Length: 270
Image (tube, rainbow, N blue to C red; front, side, top):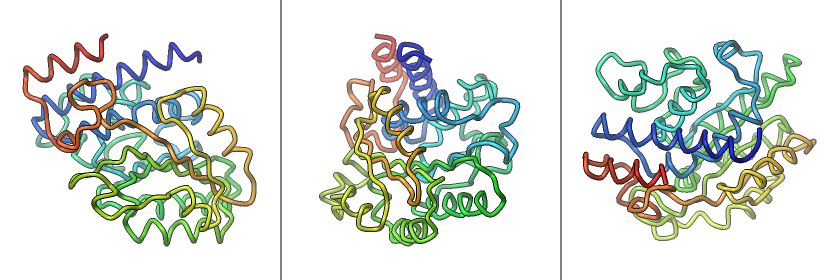
């Protein structure tokens, strides 16, 4: 798939993120928009997930550790044809499958129920270990927020993954520098994340989270790395593509009103 096709998918994904959160009048648009290129690359070029195998364990797996960015995951699943696009408008509605945090019991393609921050990497590591024990060659990917990386369980899981030489595991740390209470440096300062993961025994790649060529090469390097897990430290822009949301912490968990939604969709179309 060429980069122009990927950009079109990412644009559609971002539009559906805005539409979901606006329609629900709640949700987390900022981080969802920021990581859209990462998941577009993963789901359209790297992972072997399809509508036909979405409910199977015999494929690559993905864990959204930062589960509040569920609008992104649902938009990706719709773009892949795994769930109907029209279902996105049920996001956060009573009796909808598309809950505020993803639930693996209801939605095909959701491999782990997440929401309580810090737990996703441990679950992904468990999947990676199980795959090795079962002789399953498929890989496991996990998206973590840089604010989320302040959680202690992330580092327990990182230590375990290195200990078990989980080279079928790739974590992507979405580094946008913002979290609900302000900048990550102001809140607790998790940086330098690259040096921390190296110290915990991981292979580390620093990458522009909006550059498809760089992401493609990074995921290929991760796949070819043996004997240790890989961490992609991906620099992103929170709210990417929407002028008034970019690098604005106020849009971490705020829904746009009708006027703001129209501006956002116009920005994304441009």
